[in-house]
Image (cartoon, rainbow, N blue to C red; front, side, top):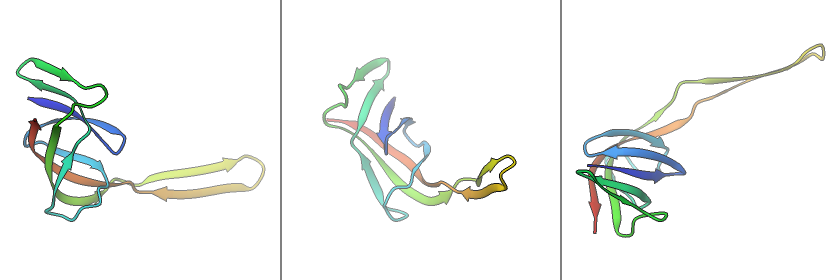
Length: 104
C-alpha cells in the first residue's frame, strides 16, 4: 500500500514506516502531523485517484528531527566589470516517519 501526498507544494510517494525529508514543517520534534492533501492511494493494486484530492483520506506521521541540507554556493560574476558576488544557502528539511495511511 502506498500513497502520493502533497506536502508544501511537493509531491511524495509514501509507504508505511518510511522516512521522508519534507520541506520544513512548523511542528516540534516528537509531534504527530496529519497530511490531508492525498492525491492517490494504491491498496493492493486497487488505485484511487482524487480530483484533485481524495476526500476523507489522510496520512499520519511523526516528526523525528529538523535538519539542514548541504550548502549550495551561488556565485554571480560579470566579466570585465569587476563584479563578483558569492552567497551560500542551506535548505531546511523535516525528517518525518510515516505511521499510517488512512481513508474514510
